[in-house]
Image (cartoon, rainbow over all chains, first blue to last red; front, side, top):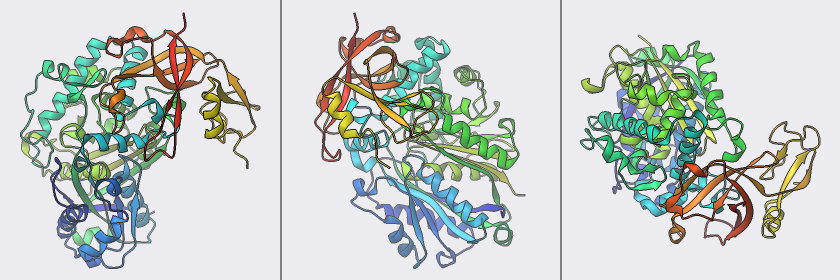
Length: 395
Length: 136
């Protein structure tokens, strides 16, 4: 297997409903990534795209083919990945494997979504399609509902009083808002930077006990990455970021994960694959962009990734161990909570942020000083799809 | 290979307040909702069994923001129930005011009825879910 590098990255602003089409959004991100790689679109050999709900948000299926043609990468194979909120990361993983195998030298990977354009009612309905349509949706399960269920279970399972847990969760959101408020690409750029705990706790309840501030927004946006073989990377950039570990795993309906909940078994399998491939452990990770679709999801993810003991992540956040300067800097981008969640693009956006961190190119207030090794973690649906990526500086 | 317990058959039984599962003839685990392979050992050697529909609440939420087309149902309580036979199932809970659902629900004994979700334009017809009430 060959070494594979990320040699160029691009990303649109993540944000509220806007009027650019999915093709336009991804084209902007893609051309930035291709330009940064000192390439032209005609040099791209294949496109791997995460896109989940384009058919609902703008009546567009097979968007990947239209994107390839639109940016001038005529007639290349263009594939779409759907793994709910982990779609972008699935696309990156397949792109990685095709380059690692030697089949391609230079590919484009990423994702695009107009989740905000759908509006809350349709977005809530379509996101619920990533639970079991036959055996879960009839009960009216929504995505906030799923993580609300896990919040109560987490409280009972680890014996943490709900009131205490909710305060810790509020601090998770506040940390994400703090970083997102100074990230110009973030959905909540310039907003909620100094939100108080009581404002989070007193927010509108979406699904008990989670309030609006425990939940990520529906966002529009796109992110794109150029992946290249080591040989090509050395010719094209001084700062290649190598994908040294990658993993993916799946699960069934929530109730059938009963032996592990509130742990997500698929995440433990996926992250173990990534650590093993990279020859690293959780202690080696300087910065991690993880899937904080809900505040509780951050705690569950950080534990399954091995950063903190099970049931102790809330304490870790309170002590600053999950912040810049702590044990591991989690979501210095603002995460899904504050940077936003354009679901097909989210995983690629996490890689974008991690690459920028490793290159030392983010705003000084949220730069993790000297970061050499980063990780991404993306969850689709109820844990039905989990992807993890480990990235390391190549210079 | 024949699919032993289909969604349709499972659903029709649920409408009669009968909860069906599949008992593995190799490892004895009970699989519900139905699958081709045992959730525990992946054997396909399973037989249909009827479950009691009794258990205790493991966790819950009250949903205030419902999906498109179901706004009128909110607020409502979703529960995960551990059946006496072992498997967990998802359903709704009556017996309490959804606004008053607290952690005290966890561990409460419940018994199963059912409620039909008539379906929407995306759902390929109706669905049925367990509707739990306190078992007093």
